[in-house]
Length: 299
Image (cartoon, rainbow, N blue to C red; front, top):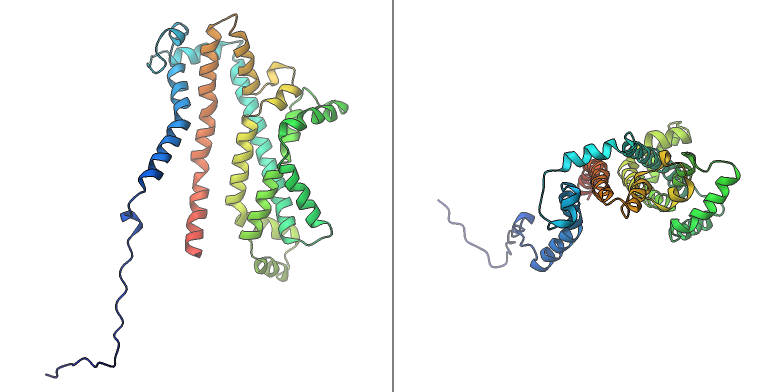
């Protein structure tokens, strides 16, 4: 049996130490405390709404805020019976404004963002700078000019008066432009053109699938913005059967001064109004998870 002796002139490399898996890394106590405080700050109003919506009108102001009760379904039934179910008409109106407006806004943002990211044309930088300036302009400032413009064509107090201003989102176009530039390689676009695909087919079959996670984000941002919008429908609409939830519940709240029972209906309506938003986020979050996983594989 031959003995193996180590030569002094040969350097044996050491095996690399195994890196600590992320699951074994200690969480930072200050960061965890800050996150817990932030979560409590965001969830505390929601908890209050849930508990307040379960109280009767007499209990709403006479008992402790965080004492639960069992009147939630009674309050929902009373809210549903208010003016032959007017609340649910407001809910459908809000879903129409937010769903259709956010979908159209995502489509327009995708087309504009793709064009700004992948095409070269005169004035492209100027258009993008104007777009950035539009991001900084609050929507409240534009409500009165939009009302005057739509009044000239007779579209005020209609569904179109809320839908049309919601289609164009400067922030959505900006996000789509940034995402298209990062997610769509120029080589793939050129390959599609070389294979004979037209510009529309390249956009629909090549660009849109790659931009899906970004478009979902744009859709959610715009959906939440339209769902919570108050000033625009408040100015545009006069018929309460066209109201969204924000304007309708505001009207109920104003009646609370003379009818205290309305406060319970307003709180119950506020609770029901956040349920679709939570459901939508839970439904669409898988697109973000797929995008994060794809980025990890590419890295």
